[in-house]
Length: 275
Image 1 (spheres, one colour):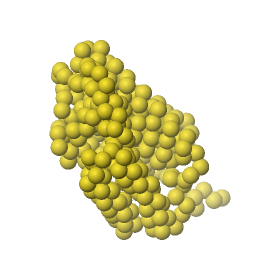
Image 2 (image 1 turned 45 degrees about the horizontal axis):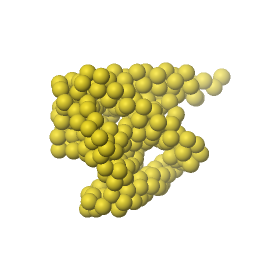
Image 3 (image 1 turned 90 degrees about the vertical axis):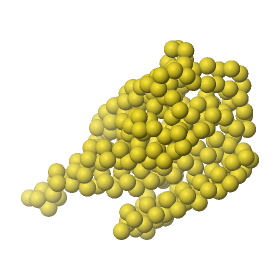
Image 4 (image 1 turned 45 degrees about the vertical axis):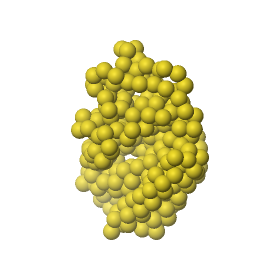
C-alpha cells in the first residue's frame, strides 16, 4: 500500500498543478510562478509521504548538494539537446529565422519545471526505486522505461515511434542518473534542461506537446528519423544515439561506485554470513 499512497500523492500534486498552470497559460509570469510552486510542493509532498510510509530519512531529495546536482543536470541536458539540434541543422532540417518570444520562454520555464519534477518523482522516485528493491537495477530499468515512453502517448501529437525513442533513450538515461547518484536531483536537472532547451531556447516540439514558443523563431523539417517530425527532436535518431552514450557513461559510473543493485534473490543473506 505504500506504493499506492506515494503514487497517489504525487499524481494529485501533478494534476492540480498542471490544471493550475493550464488555467493561466496566457500569462507567462503566472505560469512561471505556478510551475515553480508545483515543483516545490511536489518535492515536499513526496518527502512527507515517503517518510511516513517507509519510516526513513528521504535522502534522495535531501537538501545537501541539491543545487549543484540540479545545475549539473540542467547544463548536461541543455548541451545534449544542443548537440542533437546542431546535427539536425547540419543536414538542413532545422532553421532559425530570428528571435522568438522571451515571455514565451519564461512561461515554458515554469511549465517544464512542474512537469520535470513531478515526472521524476513519479517514475524514478516511486516506480523505479520500488521496483529496484525487488528486481534489482536491471530488472527495474526496462519496465519503468517502457512505462515512461507510454506515458508520452497521452500528448496531443504523440506517436508510437516517439514514445519508443523515449523508452529507449530518456527512460534508461534518467534512471541511470538516479542510480549513479542515488539522488533525484540530477535526473530532475537533466529532465528540465532537455525540455527547456527544446522549447524555451530552440523552439521545437517537446514530446508532441505543441510548445514552439521559445527564444528563437525556428522550424524543423525533413524525415521523422532525422528531425523527429511532429513529436519533436526527441523522436530523432540523434536523440537515441546521444542519450545512449550518456546512459552508458552513467551506468559505468554507477558500477564503479558500487551503486548497482542485484535482484533480491541474489543478495547475500546477512544471517548466513555470520560465522
